[in-house]
Length: 270
Length: 270
DNA sequence: GACGAATGTCCATTATATCGGACAAACAAG
DNA sequence: CTTGTTTGTCCGATATAATGGACATTCGTC
Image (cartoon, rainbow over all chains, first blue to last red; front, side, top):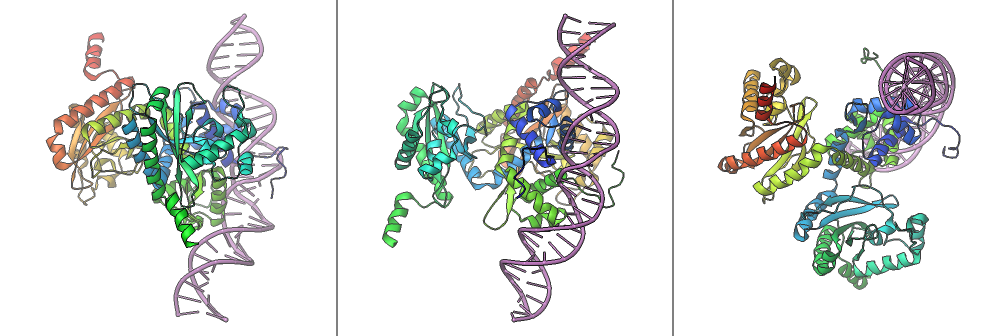
């Protein structure tokens, strides 16, 4: 109700500012001075100094190095661990990824939507000498990723277009992916039950993504493999099999009743 | 300066209350209603309701289930992941633990002090059919743990006694460990370079702990193995060797100059 | 050594966040 | 149906938190 005016000056709530600070530190991925933080998030210096001190007293952030730089603290790590431990999807995925990574020796990931972006949630780096890895939690444009084709497959065409920011259809190389083309890929991936392609983000990897469905048959996550291009093409069938098996195991645990079986049953019952 | 009076009524700062809420959820390890939270932390209901809503809007906590229960959210997980990623000790330990767990097939842990308690920070559950595991971040009395003998080894006797709450010398079975006895174990462990014992917390495990030193030669962490009793005794030498090797690798990376070499050099130079 | 920029500390002002308590809805027990 | 408990919402009073700006200190550069 009080969200009409936000153009004019308005005191920000401490809590919101505090999480702005935490987010900023997370995205910068390095210790920063309170001053830099204030500049970075466009907040009054005095406020930031006070909040930083409060957060430090709480153990939420910590001094790092001997100049005044601060970074996210251990308490956040413990809170995050508690989340992961309590959340079924994560607990199950963790074991599954370990198995997949071991079997394929490639980097295995569990990915989800984060707002209207894609993010890697869990990762298990394969045991090759040169590992391919990603920052956990870093938001990436949905159309840039294989998983993106699956994570929006429950939306209508219009919903998808409204959901994904227009600028995200511009790929890293500057080319623009036609939304209609993207949607076609989404629909096809849904039918096939997976999506694979040579990564758009770099030139040397091949990505495999398969959907994990929850009880409402919504794709709430994907299991992925990120492999060197030739490896990926050579072992394509084996990799897909491992992923699909893992994902359907997960889906079952989340209460999803198998595709065919379910629709068959519905058809028969209804 | 303004910490004299806290007996009388004083408005609590939103930020502090917010983290009280998060901590409470973490310790309860399950989704709770705002009301229960208010009761649990002894805060005004209206305040808790407002804070819960704010935290939900921030994605710091999430609704879980369809009644009003909330629990820690994914954003916390991402913040925690950023901490772990940026922090040398954690990055390095993670790989090390994976190696140790694979070699020994036992549960491997990295532990640290958390205030005046002991806490498991990282854990890699071995690949046996029956795994032994612990809650990450859960505070445990220092004298109850093998690592506890190592994590305080830089303190004087008096400092140790002042540091560890008296009641923590009462073991889970009700018996009391004499502080002098504990200190003797600390000093001996320091000399040996490790500590092992049959766990005090349960009856079927044997624990191995070895110290990780930082550049200031302070034991900032331990690497541990938690094994079934007979396994532990049978493989004692091999397990210790693996742990000690890993820990010294870690210590080196943190800028610690090897024990003997360092003291020898000091002796020669000074 | 002199200068400007960057960084950290302190304070008064005032918008507002916290809190108690009133209210309503949902629910269970009798 | 009545009664008591639990749960969620709303609102006014006031303690206080967020802010801008003044001041002090450190730093790098010439």
